[in-house]
Length: 257
Length: 269
Image 1: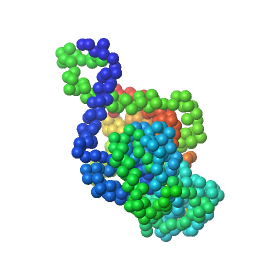
Image 2: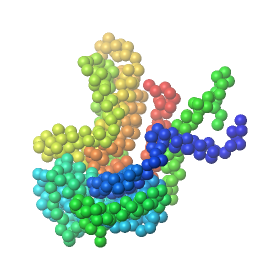
Image 3: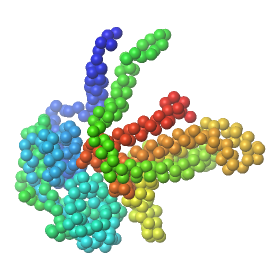
Image 4: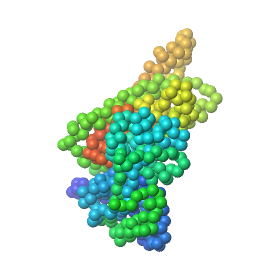
């Protein structure tokens, strides 16, 4: 045996390669060579609009599969800086995409493509009788955690309005806030206007005045090292095109500044 | 890497050694990676921040409470399963095992359906006493109890079954009631199993995340336990998340060390 002469690095690397191979074979994720895949990481609040744009993009690009991963912007940014393979990242604030560009993982500068404001949602029968932002003072309400964009916006709004009551829970993303309200577990929640609109009759909304409200700017960019830079650029073109902007406006988003 | 194999049987075949080494590295590498990436310089600061301390203390308080509840409710259930026969016992055992295989987040949804403000029981509680459970520390303890109870029941039932039932019979023939037989004979004989079950149950409660964040929510000091704190701080401050993960790894290793006699020696039971 010549084992003693071998260093540890070879067996270790071999083991890792073997594991990687095993997992990719079993997970069946070996790429079909005829099919191109564009991977988009997008803020949870873009779920409805980007899913609809995905269908348009695939129709215009035969042989291309768009894969979108929705989540909180800060979690997605963290995943990209940890090496997750994505081609495009779209976040609900400047801060999250800043994490990506600060890490040197963004190709060029981010493109603003929409804005969003916040609104109060309540269960349809409004058990906490919330009719204004000030009513949150005496209500059981939930907001996003301040580490994600919708939570940072909610914290600013509560501070602007001088609400000192603490939320009952700090949820991990905006969809979780919406769920707690639609299930009637909370009297109210602060979510994006677009999420409230998507929830339809499951919730009632209470407007937040412009003095207290926060405008979040949505930005996206091509991830450095993407294998599909061209497709990524075309995706950004679609979102900023008249058709793309139409989909966003219909969902309640505002135009980019 | 020499494998101590007896001369007669020959060397371990490559077809077994290679997958075994792969399995081992797959389990070990991520743990090693956490230590490698740990922010040793700022570790003390990361762990003594108010947020980390809140999460640590809350986890400690809630897991001790849920383990106590599991002991008080689980030991009798284990006794019932081990020492009595009744109609539908197999069904009861299956029910007890269910949370063990159920995804915890499903457990959280189920708890919300039962004890939420609009839930089957929660609605009555709200109407009768004005009591709502979601978003409270009680809800955290309930979520932990739900996922951890099966661990206790299964290991204690095993311990009851393993201890010789003839001691129970002897106590009975000497005139002991069934209650004092349980208290003076059955329970002391099964005590090592009860302790092991409690430690395992506590470890499971400590790691509980899915049911907690779904049913109890997430607020510092009331419902944000260690796993929730790790999940959320990983998005904004990964170093703090790694530091907290380190604590849970060390605790888990300590649990294994505590149980090593029973589990690692291969003589479980």
